[in-house]
Image 1 (spheres, rainbow over the protein chains, first blue to last red):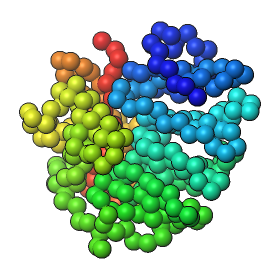
Image 2 (image 1 turned 30 degrees about the vertical axis):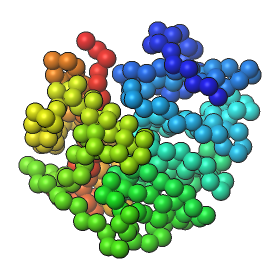
Image 3 (image 1 turned 60 degrees about the vertical axis):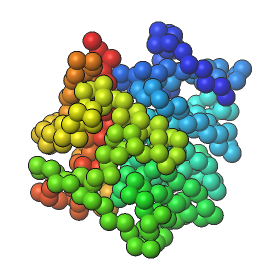
Length: 163
Length: 127
């Protein structure tokens, strides 16, 4: 899956249904090539220093997140499985144990492989990064605290500790 | 190890943790993507005329105060409380834009003094 930067006028020429991520006042424009059968889709976003996060799930969905947009597209059918505006910026997308884990600055979102939402968890502090363990997600916040969230239940597993 | 205690700054009608200004002004370097986001904040705020070297933090504090009465554009409720995102218009000689400001009301009590938890600066493409 190659992402190729394009100009604004080129993005405008892409059929609307293929503009899968669109931001108002976008400054970056790109094409993502999903192969011969599906062709190319367009992305636009605001942050000129940030690149989209692209992750392939085991059941052939491509998950793309950038700025305040998240999309998942089924590579078998070309259909969009998920298209969500977000409160805050996407930080990371990872696949783990039959779930897709999306960390934004203010939330953790877990999706089942078909794109349905397993749970969303508001975070008590601005998140910086996550890592996924056997059955939990470890989130580090801007104050340096570490939060452990159970992937199966969405519950915090322990009180936060300083990193 | 105990939870780290954040240093809180009192604004006029809101509070904010001091560490947030590291994120807003490009000083977060914990990993390459955080660093890029933090520098993006720095760059966009600078375009909007908010430069830390020229009293940018003080200017942001004024914008947060003004933003309390700005239009609400989004709201999110979770187990900790309610976050209301308001949008303040900001412009400089170089650019026009808005800053989305997240005001967090602990326990969902909108009579409480909110905490500013994050911002998203947005540069307008319009001349």
